[in-house]
Length: 260
Image 1 (cartoon, rainbow, N blue to C red):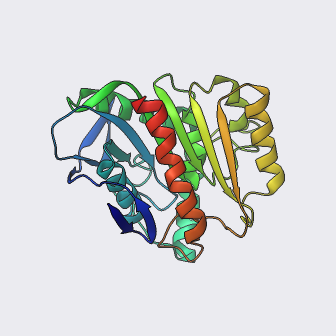
Image 2: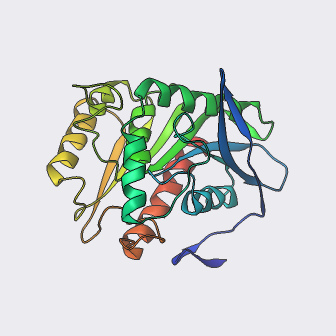
Image 3: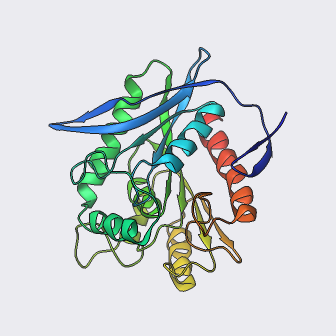
């Protein structure tokens, strides 16, 4: 059937879903999360949705639900849990400043640990396939997706406008997340807006070259006229044409790598 959701007109069948807010244990840390899964019985691939700098807000919850409607068990862990439990905000200039402040306090090893704990949690659910998961992230989450794509269980990654990949690694001065490219385990799709003031096109070139040089299965998509945050229909930079083109590409990636 033909449905219209978030201004994206796509032909697909949507499943009824349920949502929960489980707590993920990672040692002494308790990580809040948002979980969505199909109502019907079955075994489904897992997908981890990684937030922007604005926390697990309504946009991230919506993306999580959309994956569940397509037949995935999707979960969005709070990656600022150590710094600001329960943090969630909108898209004002003040919110951007606060979100960036938390982002700059994160550490790569902690992010890797928290996403591994999220994978481990998914694998405790009887509805989840145990042969690899997908990740998708936006803004800072797009950077985190690139970082955690080195984890062995991650088979497919969709990184949306992840800034700083070529010149910064969380909590590690003098290093860059792009240096981890040789350790990426699965297929990676990266999505960028050509008009993104946060990510110069030469940085996108550097990412693409690193993926090519290391023989990582990948595709890099560049959208003319699109700015940072083009996928989020709650931001002024939302670009429906770019968003409508990107979403089926993500679904095809996950279908091929997680369902195939």
